[in-house]
Amino acid sequence: MLLSPVHLLGQQTQPTRQVHEVKPKDTLYSIAQRYGVPLDQLYTLNPWARKQINPGDILIISAGELTPKEKAQPRPIQEAHPTYPAREEAEPEQAIRPEIRVALMLPLASQKTYVEFYEGFLMGINDLKKNGISIELFVHDIPQDETLDRLIARGSLTGLDLVFGGVNEYQIERIVRSRGYGHYVIPFHRYASLDQAGDRVIQINPPASALIARAADTFIRKYKSMEVCFVRRTEDGDDPFAHHLKVALGKAGIRYRVVNITSQYLGVLGRNTVVVPVSPSKPLLQQLLAQLDPNDACTLFGYPQWQSYGDEVTKQMHKYGTTIYASFFFDPYQSDATDFLTKYHAWFNKKIGASYPKMAVLGYDLARYFIRSYAALGQGFMKESWLLPSDGLQSDLVLSSSGHAGGYYNQRFYFVRYDRNGNIHREAL
Image 1: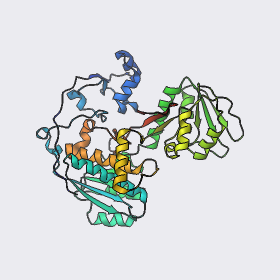
Image 2: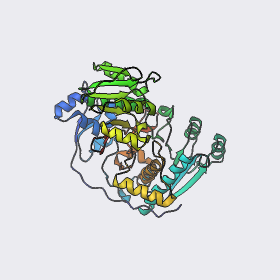
Image 3: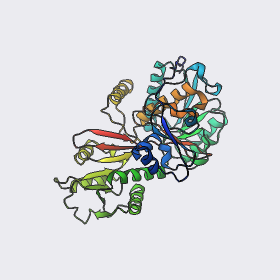
Image 4: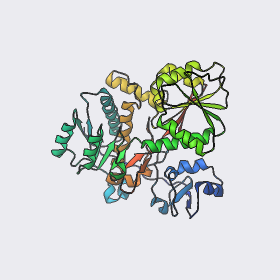
């Protein structure tokens, strides 16, 4: 698929940012107090600092243009839509690409979910065509691991700018260890050795431990003044999130109770109670909803998988002001999302599947983000990733390094609240 060359806009001047160089013994809390800003503002402007800050790090205190010293620090992608550097200002290794060479390596003939990803990917490429980006797309059906081995042996990855695919640990490992391509994007699975993969590997799913830890910390900040009630059935074990949250609540000195709804009565729950099922199980959620009293004014907190449980469950989630944490969230009632669904139906004469995440939307978001990035900034685009727009329909990408010799992963996740008025609020974290 060949499209015409990219046209880039010049940079715009913005107000100077206020920054702080971290000193020994500084903490995020003490810095927030010193500048009189909310701690959440520091988290929002410096997501990378959630893990650790060290003397010499540069923290953004208020928004504006980056100083030269800030540009030396790793920076997250901005929520706004900044313009890209003009062609004549680009460094040699970041020159505009006359044509982006992209490969998809997926089991398309045997698994419909990956076909949906491919279809959304094509829609993303079509949008890029309208912006004048030239793309050569190679699509490989990978029904078996041996098929991938043969393609790699024939040099099919050589000369590619971007590779997308790999649906199991073996395939991911083979692509990671291959040579001759620019960057490899792992769209679906988590790679166990990401911290040793090198900086050309990008994993879209955050490591489970990192996501769970951040979600639990955010939960405690939001619900620390409420009674926390975990619910389970006799047959239910703790999901890793529920287990981590219990430990974190204990360390924070916050009490919680656990109710077995197979044998115990919940009682009437007031507005000061947040109810957390111990797993994302649909039968557990349905039994809980059936046992809640109509007079209960409690809040529910739950899991990403709840997005795929259907309209009836969603109505009940609204009734109790439910919040879920999720790496991906697609609101079909937003105008951009509605446009996408309409176009998808027109292109392929079908509706997108009810999977989590929505595979067609994932393909669309990833095509637009990474191909546009390569077109604008060249093979060094990860060095300037903070320049790139974060405007996905289902996932806003904020890429973070997994370590000194490691690859990158998307650290963006959401708290999504289904309020009692039927509205949905997505808070990016």
